[in-house]
Image 1 (spheres, rainbow, N blue to C red):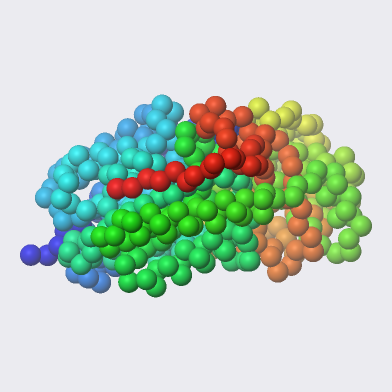
Image 2: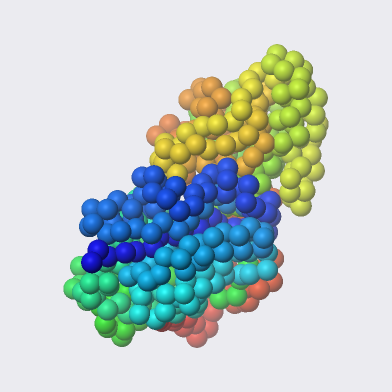
Length: 499
Ligand SMILES: [Zn+2]
């Protein structure tokens, strides 16, 4: 009889320091496919799993694919709706031979700290102990005891920026098929150390400290007993007990080896902690230094307001500094501000606009400023991603406008969107190559858009829920000691989780 596997995915990342709650509309704006509707997906992690199953003549039972731009915690109502959909379809599909769950691993629900663990456990209760569950995760996941205990195998992306979602789907599917066929008996161990840093030095495309640990991990995969290795830089903007970064190793029926290798990876990770902390600048310093540099673009990396890390995107810290410095060279700034976007659409192209802009969604981080400018572009805000987790799919900024404030052009959008390259600027006709200053609001992916052309890059220290350093974040559930609040920890040993 043909093998039958179920595939279900809830994929988003949350922020417990800021951002807007993620609700069902957030998923509807990006991806919300139920049942057979899901089978059309041919990119990203879900696309990779589906293609692999198809190639192996496996019957897929499509459950749910829900993916949204990161934000604050998922509302309880939304999570329960998605979970009920996924679990309900799974119950109807029983019996099945295996389950593949492409998840993120760092989402939270208003009243639930580990929804991925909860979901894996709930799937386990439906399928019983004999049916394997394989889960793919973002390498920024917060790996918990529940995730490890209730799954046979967890594997993570190998790249950051995340270019390998499709191939991770393929790897996950192949591991699931090997387990079902009895070719491997996975034994899994995670070792983590309390290193909580932003992702600024987390690239796998450069010679970063994170890429060194990743390279070590991947070398172990040539060992015949090793099924998979993963390295995690924990998403630092959730606030949960036992957060940490390190290595996860799956071996074929050899738990000691899994623990040993995972431990080595977490020890190497700890040794790299100081290198993972970025140097930061004030916007004023960065602008003054940038003005003394010939040409551009100069990148002002306002990573504290990263929509891809769950922030609202409504900070105007860099914009205010550019205005204060009376910059007269072309500069580009993105700001999420639904009120101002609506006002622009009301007054129309070519008209003057006077508005209060900034911090209108998440007022914890600053005060709005008054601007007088001219509306020079209006759009309904759709753009197409050219790579990454949503390659080819449509991103929705909602009603959007470009306001000219002298030489500074501000892209004002209704909704926060995840940055891949510079699709948002391009979609409204803004020329990034001609800009002196470009404000980017992500810690990493700006490298795709500007890596080759940027004259200088400044990582900024600005207020927001996704800061470049986590040294000053006020965690309540995460207990000390952790780096960077505690730079040296005596008698530190890695926390080991096993299945
Ligand atoms: Zn990630």
